[in-house]
Image (tube, rainbow, N blue to C red; front, top):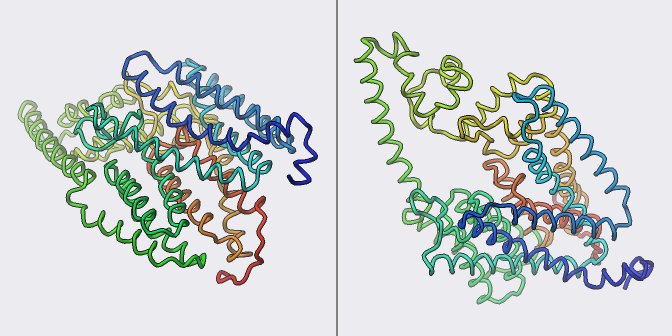
Length: 489
């Protein structure tokens, strides 16, 4: 026990003794809560129970972190910032929202989901500060255990015929008993490189081969483009890490790269490819229907698209963008889409939602741009236009101030990584640090491409853990070997 740990009060020493086990339990209940949420949703009982469970875990973890922390001022400053931003956001919604502040509970619950990220990060930093290497090993075990649980759940759903599919309308992709495909994609993508690192570290070919097969198999069968790309990110990233960290393991490199090559060779038979083909076929059919609809409208009205675009394109835009047209008017929507007749553009939900929220923000004015809009305002005619890109979502909901605050929080950890690599490359470039770096990259990719991380508490939990581990590697962990070389300077 360190001097700092000996200085702890007796009651804190008792908690600290079991803290690694508590950390592992926090991991294990994450996929368990996801499965419970799935079945509650499938049975039509709503998400109240699962929501209360997640809030209990969040507030319990926050209370434990604050109780154990030697730097309670950090928690207090964080709490003050959270409250001030919430007040300003609520004020902007009340004064300039479309319907005032129509559903504060729904809006503030969503706010707490974002606030969870830095809060869990601070808590895990506290836990790692108190437990050191023992706590870090608990996190490593948590990644392995959770991946194992996910594999078991996916296998059970497939064997029982209850797999809901990643793409339910096409019956493609092994999702398992999980509700949100984008969040689950992020979760298995962040778990995979850390699990692979641990089997590689054992220096046994059988472990490496089995771990590679399971990790890449889960990513391959999930069927999204991001999980498929993650296979190659893991293979290339871990190969580079092994070489740069001087953790020379030719067999591990060969196995991981061979796994990636096999997945690449199987591209034409992959679920992801079949989904892309199905999407193209549907798009071609929809385009043909759209062309026929336009031709029919031209015949009925005795004019052409070139002569009377608003008349001839009205049925097409009503079909694909009906709610937006109803909310903002046909002329404005037609101009924004440049009078296109390309169905692939009109049915692009990501772009549509960004445009809708941009229109909302223009109406709401300056304060909305500064402090954000209410989540309920993003629903019209029972269609939800909450954007499907995380950074856009933070901007539209919490304004430029909220986005800047969140980016500064994230950039601090990116700066820690860069600082460590530039100042002492060989000291900090370890197999473990490299694997968590690859995991961080997969999360950033999902944050950029989807809305499956920052406002999804099941996925954002892992972001918080990865950030805390980055802090641990740079600011807490004690290294015995001094830096030997630094190729970046």
